[in-house]
Image (tube, rainbow, N blue to C red):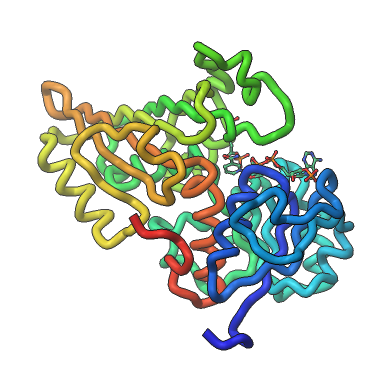
Length: 319
Ligand SMILES: NC(=O)C1=CN([C@@H]2O[C@H](COP(=O)(O)OP(=O)(O)OC[C@H]3O[C@@H](n4cnc5c(N)ncnc54)[C@H](OP(=O)(O)O)[C@@H]3O)[C@@H](O)[C@H]2O)C=CC1
Ligand SMILES: CC(=O)N[C@@H](CCC(=O)OP(=O)(O)O)C(=O)O
């Protein structure tokens, strides 16, 4: 890769869990470099002191929206909590409309002007859009589990999800308090979670989602109960999923129900289980993924690679 092909990326909210993962991924990418990393709390501190995989003298900066927009980045990744993107997007729209923006929050997932980037399911809709909304972590797991059967459904899929507590970010709450989570499983937002609406909108079929947070740090287990119109058997369902995800390095279809401990720190999702109830119309499928990687940073890198014309898997370790 020639030096002039190297694209620069700025990260806003770079102290957070997903921002740190993205710094690690960009550090190993031959075609990307970091232009800036913005954080209020870490202003002035060296990135190497927080992300060991990063080499170089770059320091975190507390940048205003205007400074972000005026920065030299070809792409800006927003890794801010929900509800914080609008003003910064407006500043970039005004100053540098051709810059790519990848937003990790939920703020643009319902906006038709933005490309929704779940590559395995939506990449054929990518047509050079510069505004990219990165899917939610649970929403990624649900869509990967349901999409191959979405046209066969007889009822809304019921999705039981359990997330590690890194899914709740770094702002202190019960959901990321290891003391309160010890020996515990915390149900929350049992109807109308944002990801329920996100998946319903993206797949075009209603889904029912019941989230929980557990005592582990990273990784999601999504167990999905699907009622089908026609009866089937486990071998047929497995074969259908293998064919649907054939050639997808970041979706591994396995026979058994996957364990979350196996995908923590991994870039791919696993989909398996494929239990079929007597009668053949009720199927249970389990998907696991690392919420910080395929559920966030790895997916953001797939989207950046797509936007810059790199191989979609560039710098993403293969299974
Ligand atoms: N965690 C996960 O598993 C996933 C998260 N996401 C989404 O990605 C985004 C980032 O998530 P995550 O990395 O977990 O978040 P964190 O809470 O870990 O980090 C958020 C970052 O944004 C900065 N920030 C700027 N403004 C605010 C503010 N008003 N309140 C709090 N923090 C602020 C933080 O502080 P500072 O400025 O001091 O650096 C920090 O750098 C969120 O929208 C989240 O919903 C999506 C998929 C998965
Ligand atoms: C355990 C936990 O709290 N998880 C978060 C989801 C994290 C995520 O993907 O959130 P966004 O849709 O906000 O990007 C939640 O349920 O809100």
